[in-house]
Length: 575
Image (cartoon, rainbow, N blue to C red):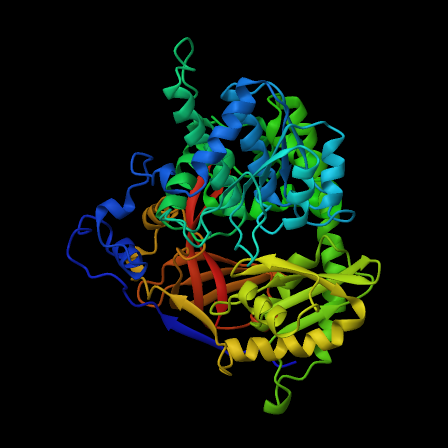
C-alpha cells in the first residue's frame, strides 16, 4: 500500500483583522485570525454569555417529567453509553439530579459485548430489574426506536438526551433533547452528550427555582460539574465551538484550582500530569484513554464509579485499576495493528483502477472493544476513512469507523443503507466516527459498496494528507513566553486546532528513545540558539539520525522538568 503524499499548507485568515486584537502577541493574533476570531468577545470564556437552554427543543417537556419524578421521589435510572462521553454524562446526570433533590437515582451501562450500543430491548430488561419509573438516556437513545417503545410498554417513562445525528425514524419517547434535531434552534450543534445533559440540568434547576424549591436551601451551583463536562467534551472530540470552549475552559479552571472530583485528580496523578498545569490535550490524551479502557475491555461502570466517588482513596484505587486496563488495551492494540498492517500491505491503491477510497479491515480474532482505536490509527497512516471490524456473535460483525476531513461518515453509511436496504442491521454516529453491524457473510460486498460510496462522496478526488500550519515563527519569538501564551490560549480541539508552525533548523544531536521516539537538539540558523524538540511515535526513527538540518512541522509547547519550565518543539512531521 502506498504512503499518502503529505502536503504542507499555510492557513489563511478567515477573519478580517480590524485591529481589535492589537494588544495580543502578533503570533497569537495571527493564530486567532486563522480560526475566524477577530473580536475580543469571541475570546470570552466566561459562562455569562452561554446560549440559553430554552432554545433546545423538547427541554421543557423533559424538565416537567424529571421534576415530577423528583418531587414524587420516583426511581430515576440513567442509561449511559460505554465511552468517556457516556461515562461523564452519567456522572453529571447522577451528581446533578442529587444536587437538585433526587433521592432515588441509579444507572445502567450496557456491556458492549452482550447488548451493544444504546437503549436496546435487552438492556431495558436489565434496567427493569431495578424497577425504574423514569429512564433517562445520556449520550444515546436517538436511534433506540425498539428499546424506547419496549420500555414505555413496560410502564416506564423515557426521556432521551443525545447529541448523535437522528435517524429518519425517531423513537416515540416522552421527551427528546438533542440539538441535532432538524427543527432545533439551539445555536451550538456541537454539544457532546455530557453537554446536553448539563443543559437539561440547568433548565431543571431554573424550573425548580421558579417553584420555590430553593427557598429554604441554597440553590445548587451546577458549575461545580464542569470539570466532568470538560472531560467528556474533550474526550468525544466534538467541534470546539464557542460554547464548548467556554464549558471546557471553565472545567479546566476548576481542575487547576483542585475543585474537581477526586477521580479526575487520581487519573491525572496516574498519568503523571500536574493538575495545576492541565490543558485540554491532557484530558484527551491522558485521562480519556484510561476512562475508555473500562468500556473497551471490561465494564464502564468502573469508570463511572471513578467519577462518582467523593472518597480520594477509593478514587485512587479505581484509577489504578483503569490504568492497568489501559496498559492491557495498548498491548492488544499493538497486536491488532501488526495484523492490520499485514492486510494493508496486500491492498493496492496505486493503480487508478484499483483505488482504495475507503478501507475495511476484519480479523476474526480482533477485540471488539479496541477496533475504534485501530481504525483511528490506520486512518492516520493512510489518510482514508477506515472501518475496523470484529466478530459480534450470531453470524454478525461490528464495525467502528473513523473518517477524514471532508467526508461525513455517518451520512456515507446512510447512503449505503438507502441503496442497499437490509444490508446494515444497525448504524449510527456523526461526521468523524460511526458504528455499524451486519452479517459476516456480507463483508466483501460491504467493502466494495463502502469503497464506491466514499468515492462518490469525495467526488473521485483523492484526499490529500494536509498539514495546515500557522506560518513560521521568528527565531527570537520561539521562547517560553510565547509557549505559555499559546498553551493558555485554548482550549484547542476539533475545528479549533492547536497551532502548528513550520520551520527549518540545524540538528546538533538526535537520539532514539524507546525504539520509536526521537529526542532532538536543534539550533536556529541566524543566532544559533539551542532548542529542544521531541518527535513521538516515529515510523522510521533511523531516517532522522544523522541529518544535518530539518524542516519540520511543530507545536510550541512547555516542558516542565524538576520544577523548571522551558520551551520545547513538539515535532509533528519532518518534511
